[in-house]
Image 1 (cartoon, helix red, strand yellow):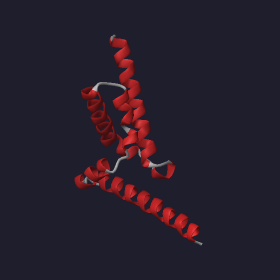
Image 2 (cartoon, helix red, strand yellow):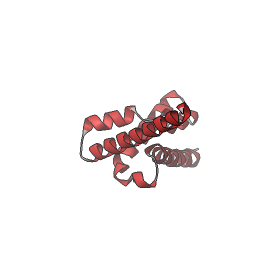
Image 3 (cartoon, one colour):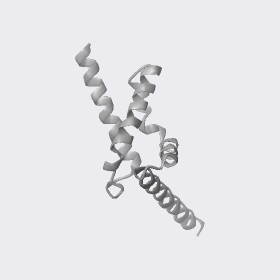
Image 4 (spheres, one colour):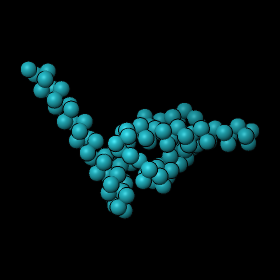
Length: 108
């Protein structure tokens, strides 16, 4: 019986988390700056950790900042019905890092 409650409890936690992200994205799209700050703070680090792998400390910070600038500019393209915000953010970060790599190789 406790296992069922535990599973049910974690399911509710996931739903609340998804509702929170959906609410934050909606508020961001309506110009709520506090929602943007909360969305950035609540973003899982794994989505932007790859920036650290691809550069020095300063370069990694620049790439991470670029990821969030791109997210800010393209947030209206996020579709919660098609996947999680974390997955979408990881895709944005991956694409930015690919672009960065191509520029780096081309300029080398």
